Picture 1 (spheres, one colour):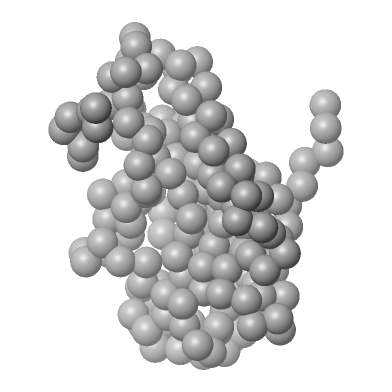
Picture 2: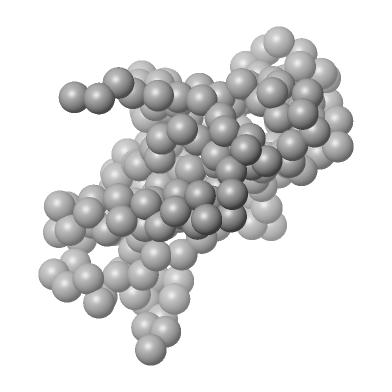
Length: 185
């Protein structure tokens, strides 16, 4: 078994080819998870799409990557907690920091509502210090159906509720018809 890794690779350190390769690998892992779980009998009955904050993670009423709570410097803040549906898997592969001040220093992704299993911890300050807008995770984090995904941030500066954005790069696999109603061909 290989060592698990949990760190950010700044987008500037990756070629376009490498970034496309990471996305393709996420899609493969999602297909494998869906087949293993027998979400549908045939792969043609499935679709992989961008993860939507409201639809998939019940994050915000506007389907936006807005952090809902006010941030207190050095105090963990729940970004979201969401139970995946019976027919859905999500793969996270990176993070984009939209706010100019980059007010958060850490992101954690955990499985379980009470953060029972930490699946990844990412120090965002390296993006800030290099003026990078995004970073890719060293490993894809896959959450499967009926798992609770919880994301936590630790602010480095105080901020008001609904003023900070952090876009998680993620893909969702689900049956055709849930969001996308027909195959593309």
